[in-house]
Length: 469
Image 1 (cartoon, rainbow, N blue to C red):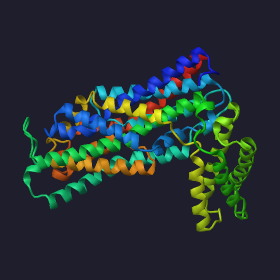
Image 2 (tube, one colour):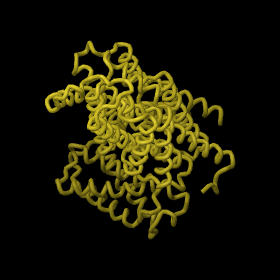
Image 3 (tube, rainbow, N blue to C red):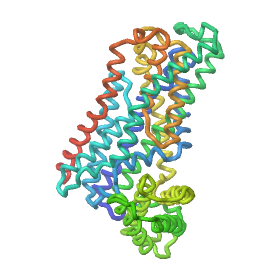
Image 4 (cartoon, rainbow, N blue to C red):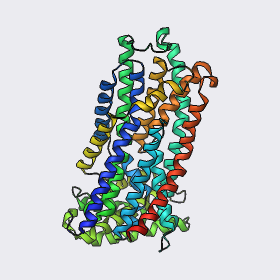
């Protein structure tokens, strides 16, 4: 694996992997309170059992969650344009990204402020992309995949607002269906609630933990894949288990559908993507020849193959979204299917990567939960959280995170849950039931996370480039 790398680069590479693991570990204990706050605060589970339970389900969530969110993280940086053989620049990018994310996550956890790991990662990635703009070579702002960044940013922006509104609705349903007044009372310190309430909260805690693993764990997988692809493209550009000839068939179908399209209504952008598909298809065909698997290719060719597949699928995706792309419904459906199949060659994560991130997140979940549990349980509303409010907020969080994971979008577990709790407080006694100071701190963290991490990661990237060069 390391044949073509110097000892210094190997050490820095391994350190980069360790930093990713440390980030995911912090992510575990930073976000633990989101899942375990209700069961601990309501005396439904002892803290030790709660964090172990949550940690196991986080682990299972990562293992079973697929890689859709991970690939969204990878695609935020157009690595196919940025990788230029400069290993120092690549490592500077990774170090800046991870360190800025760790600094912000650790700082907000230390002060007991619920903050979004998703915002932190996205801001760090965008900061790296902007940093490329200031380097010699005129990379320009193409160093950020702005279309993907806007899509991801929108999901992060809307998730707490949806969580807030949906929690109010869930509480309304709760009050209509459950008439037992006990569930709307504040927990009595040291006293266990009835078993049916405990079981309800165990269930909602488990759902949040599981879906947190599926979404947040994939972010760690995505960052680690960025490290592997950028530093060792000859090893991790392509999935060695995927048959190249099968992918050739998928790309041939894409090429034929695009090639047969009437171009009379095409504008500049459509023509660019039209010819991009044709150009990179021919390059792909020539470079794979009769090879069946990636490990049969020359090391120097593997990353070029990745770029060809990436260019073809992205351009075909762009054409599908264009109103000027005249195509039947059947062909559009077939084209989407062929694009998905072709991406399997380049959108993957080795089993050991998923397992490693799962262990880091699951282990981190079992540590450091106390600081934010108090904030979630006592400081968002003027009244302490009731059983019904805890269950409602966790139902909202699990629904939102689960849907986002299905759509392949990173979403903030922290903001989904904290906004859900705020919504339940408002449902009970209106806006006056919120603690202004805590809500202000959470909103400020929500607003400041992106700009702070953008500036921090951009500055660290330019600093590291100068130091290591």
